[in-house]
Length: 144
Image (cartoon, rainbow, N blue to C red; front, side, top):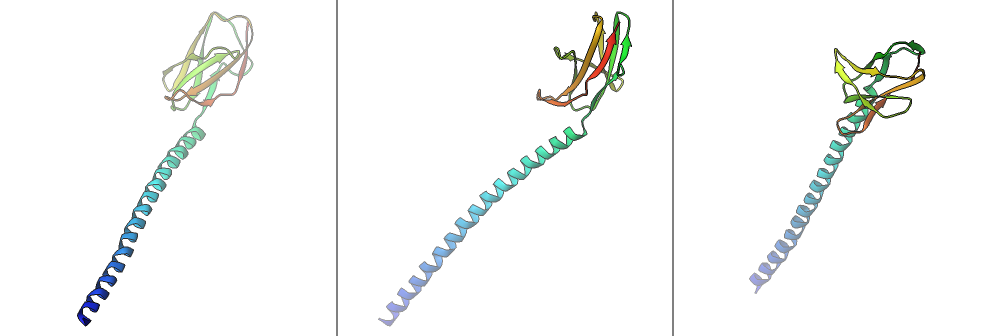
């Protein structure tokens, strides 16, 4: 009979020892899923920080015409300096945004058939996703 008690004690100890092991496995699984979520958040936040950094380094400026320049003639070519974060568009008097062409390190717009008077010009960079990356300051000029 003493042998039976020993067997029961051994069984009780081995079954008690088995439970904590299974709990540790569950805890380890939870930690790994938490670490996956944390690493996903890190990837998303680093992508956002790179995007914000790119926006900080982006620039767009209307080079020509210069501020308060008087333009005479039937056509004028605008020159716009911009970073290469997308494509550039230009707007006259807060109107429709028109696409520019890229050549020789600048963005250009062939402006024809304009009316006499005061004109405001703005340029913007648009990313490949269609969102505005950067907007230029307003440039004022006069057409005679």
